[in-house]
Length: 394
Ligand code: FAS
Ligand code: PHB
Image (cartoon, rainbow, N blue to C red; front, top):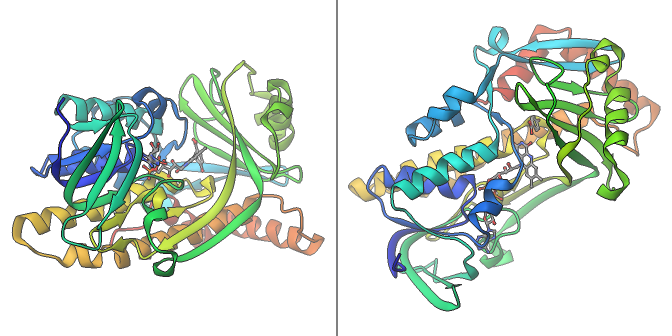
């Protein structure tokens, strides 16, 4: 494919944010290019999010890529919380009127890639040394190298969909960014294993040894997590040690339902809360993980990225259709309002369920009281439910 030298929207990053944006813009006749530093296979192989809010499902439907999601996605009406030897269900559908859909980010990536390729989209995989310039001017410019050839693309707007370690936020003067961050004193070890999930719905387990999460990707594929130390090394965790720890942290008859099987994938990931604002800098928009990170306890990361894409694509459609700049000019303020409420919920779920090394016995008692309150008060459970399923859009 000949390389574009001019487009309307230059998108950096072919993760869920970048491809959702490219697909939605294309469905409204807006041209874009997507520049991705990794290969398609690498991006599709990353095991990440698993829980979709209804708003994200609706957006994927709007993008025309939800057919397999509706066929294979698992609709869940609640979660279980295990603590102090008991199991407590939070019924999202009864308390907040909706559920969530379990469908892996990997699958969304494949569905989006297939749709973009079928649409003849211009996606440059393994783009090297991507840089952006003049995004405060009328003609933003993107430079990159592909197959050894230096290239450049001029565009009206740049969407920084390049994640936490991307080039777009790094290209903004630090004087123009407000950074807010909290790094947690622990990590998550994630494991994918070909074994049936031990329950219909996700189990979030609080335990004095640390947090554990029993999730899934299908009726035969489990996605499991345990809280580990901040400096944990994956090589310290052979499969058997993980299975033993999962049993200890869950306990009871549920633990007896665990069927061990060899891990397909394992990863240790740090947990942080991070926000970089504002999310608009001239003609540059920061989207998804490029602007914010949440600890995965609240299952918000991918859903926040989708919410940013929803706002930005509609703003760009309005601008190109009628010159209306309201969406563009209000993008950052509206996106950040949702971001901070999801930050709060993700921080709260993380604080509720994890073992903090610095916690005193008083802190630990407060944590247990909070768990007791959330699982015995309809008002408290409703608050958890409405945040987990996704707050209404403004
Ligand atoms: P992404 O990071 O997904 O995509 C950014 C893309 O930009 C990448 O493909 C990258 O290669 C590319 N890129 C970066 N720099 C570039 C450059 N200079 N030039 C060109 N391309 C560049 N969220 C949940 O909701 N639940 C979870 O359980 C969960 N688990 C996670 C586990 C891990 C290990 C990680 C890292 C994240 C997890 N997340 C989870 C969060 C994750 O799902 C993100 O929210 C989601 O991927 C955000 O999508 P993007 O904004 O597209 O960013
Ligand atoms: C997952 O299935 O990967 C998952 C689900 C819920 C979370 C985090 C991760 O809170």
